[in-house]
Image: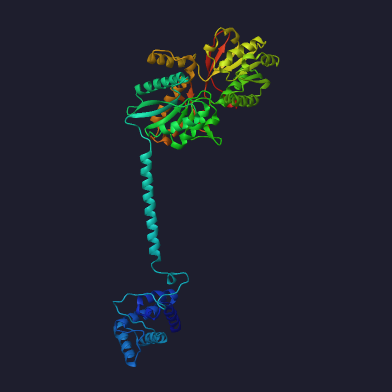
Length: 532
């Protein structure tokens, strides 16, 4: 057993130096770790070392026979060691100490410094590294964390300072339109209808804290100038939403601005291409439209012709001069194919050639088409319908945007024709809004501007509801409220927003039928979900 203890002591002295013998408590732990089975012998050894240290024993002192005898007697008298155990312990200590003489003397008041032979050398451990390294790294990390925290606070204060807030007790909406020049009348009628909606919202009891305010801005027709103008206007942080009914080229220029400044933009342009509001095939985050796009309108024409009228032999006469008409025509061909229709004639025209379209109409009349579809014919409608009847086409005509003002004295040629409108003044539910318009402004809304005006009116109602329902005033909160619109009642339809397109999801349209004279409103129709 003595050999084992001596071996363990020698190992510890090699690792920690001879002075380890002056620390019996630490030595006891090391010995028990190295030799758990010798706990009794380890205890006796360290117990004796503790007593000897108090008597002045040092491992580096040369021991005389007299001092050895003195220590043995003390162990026997003071610690109740047997003389045999006392001699054994003293022999072990002296043998190990004599083989490892080193200068272990130091003053009690001196600091302890790590030095060779005093610390165990561990590869990659603290013996090979400065003791202050961890403290330096910790201070560096704490400093970096403090800097990041300060930067975060600065950014938060900047965002709070730059975010949009109501001005006083007002929710402000910017309305961008042409309010001067040759196109001013339409823009002014739209703004009037929007103001009518504001008046009605403010009179309601839906919100007591904030009132709605719409501000009209005379916007340039040039897309580049319009974009710069809107950027300048929107430096006013009190404006929480934007709306416009301007042409597609302007929409393409200003839609990215909505994302840039994070303010929702609601589009009321009647003939809107979805691509004008998209980037890489996806809608801009903050751009929304309240109207059906060219694809939705083409789908409705094909659906009504094939599914509702059961007329599958179709002739098409479309305007190739306008980008909206071309886009709608492409969608119409696709939807006719989906609904299993047959295209008997497909002829394009320009605004100039519409004046003399007899030959084209004869080709359609001779094509055995049951129905002639006129997508987005606009002001050319009466000319085209008249020429088709003159050329001998007696079948059904299906067009868009029926207006009485286009008829003149040509009511009879409109017999057996159907018309699908985004909205119609013939719709009884819309007449109440037109009556309110007349009451407020002491004049009727011009028939040519009814569609634009009603869309502006409904857009304000939609924006107002979203502002009041939003979780905050930031653009993101208002955007989310617009995006989550479900079954919201408008004057001309019920609105549900498709999050994939930021436009209406299967919104109803007005159906008008002309039997022998002027058109008669039939109903609001929509495609069946099961049909596509």
